[in-house]
Amino acid sequence: MKITSVRSAAAFSVTVLLLTLLANLSGSMNLVAISQLAPMITVLLMLIFVSGRKDSLRSSGLRTFGGLRWYFAAILSIVPIGIGFLAAWAFGIVQLPSAEFLSQGTARFTVSEYAWYITKSSWAPQMLISMLIFSFGEEIGWRGYLQPKLTEAYGIRKSILITAAVWACFHYPFYLNQYNTDGNVWINLVLFTVMIFPLSVFMGWVRWRSRSIWPVVVIHMVINLSRSWLEQLFFDKASGWSYVAGEGGIITIAVWAACAAVIWIKLGKSTRAKKAPGELSEVNAG
Image (cartoon, rainbow, N blue to C red; front, top):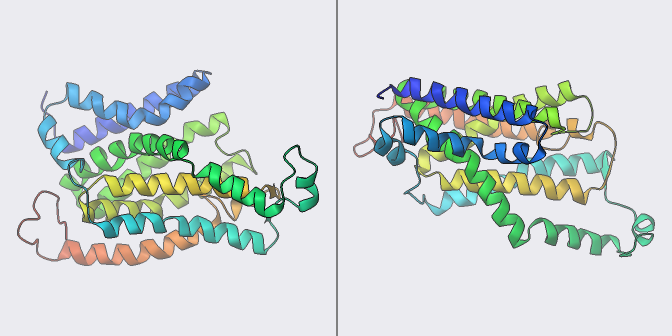
């Protein structure tokens, strides 16, 4: 079956969203967990049942490592959520557990020992491997399959925005199973959606410029690990803390938005410039 890149992108999007919704409605937490890999599962289905397999694999970025600077950018993706938590800590919205509280536990940690234990556990090899697998399971779909298909049809800026919208919708069913239990679910949903777009500009730009899927896999992994680490580290949280810190906090959003604004301007200049020789494999790459 031969279909256009737009139809391939649409078929992928509908399939991945349907699989995720059904898994979250099933009542099985095992299926909910597996559905986080729905983008990868859907890519495999597309490769099996839709023509153009070689082109899809070629444009996926799997075979390209990307330059080291993109992995440095991936490590820096911890900054927005880190700033969010530091600001929330400064305002007393989140706190480290007190020495008195920790002394009552079985382990009897000091505050510094607790901080080291949480840090060591959060960034342990098994956590890195697990998060790497799930991050790849998403990114091979979003920026390995969907974004290149959309870029072919619409150019890089529109493809980033459409990918962001599908990515946001993918997460909505997880809110049925307490994806975020703090505060009002509708406020969290709105904040999360707003955050996805500037984050997608950053990730989409890295994917486009590096021509590799691997830097964005690392970005996804670093963001998820740092979020989990900081949420555990700042154990004592006021109600509504996630409106300020966390992945969808207003401070996190503000930092991503500032970064995205600069990138968006650069993308506009790049797409207006004449394509350079040897850069035809990805539309308007520069």
